[in-house]
Length: 286
Image (cartoon, rainbow, N blue to C red):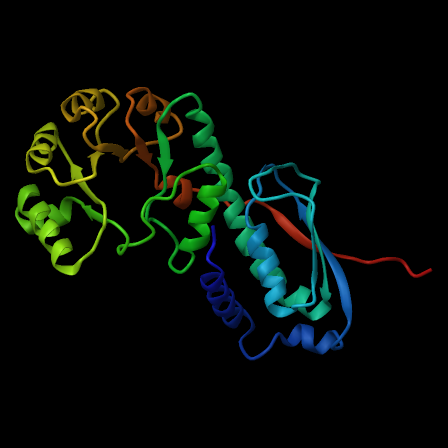
């Protein structure tokens, strides 16, 4: 779930970027104190995401606003439906409009693509992981969208898990010295972090098993045919993750191998934003 403080910081920064010295279009045309209503119109089929963010944006600008949801995050949505109605100062509605839409359109696109992957894995034990291939300063919401779509969040950043990838290993002089250095570092600093190590071959898998002290082995760029021999060596001693070249077309073939996780950067960086719009609700004068 989204952390309230981090979300507030994001909203403040994003609004400052957009409004700057003032939304002069709105300030010039809308008197202060005028209140109004707007609805979020769904214009494309998919999975809805970002409702919590939208409500927080409106509330940030107008604590007295009234937010009425018609759907919730993770719901299937169909073109023509409404996601929510919000009553607030008209200036708030206009200043919040683009930030709300940018977040919800992007998050809904990610949630929708993630759901397509997770639907392929129904009946299998394999879980879909996201990656750090995210938009700078937007990672929190992108990873939340993955979760809403049914995926599992991998590490949030460089600080909450050890992951020794090819460059770490090569710069360290190999898998064994890299793992040993990490174990010493964690002990010296009193850190309790899980350790994942990338394997580029069966020989790498064997070396990781020899040095031990890890929690997960990443099988990088292994084909579905190359996964079973690796799993046979690992014998369930450590979690396993397949990574690299995984697509909607082949993800089920990876799941059939019994690997614990597949990490798919594409669920974020290949997602296409869905079409949503915020429209004023104007009641005719009687």
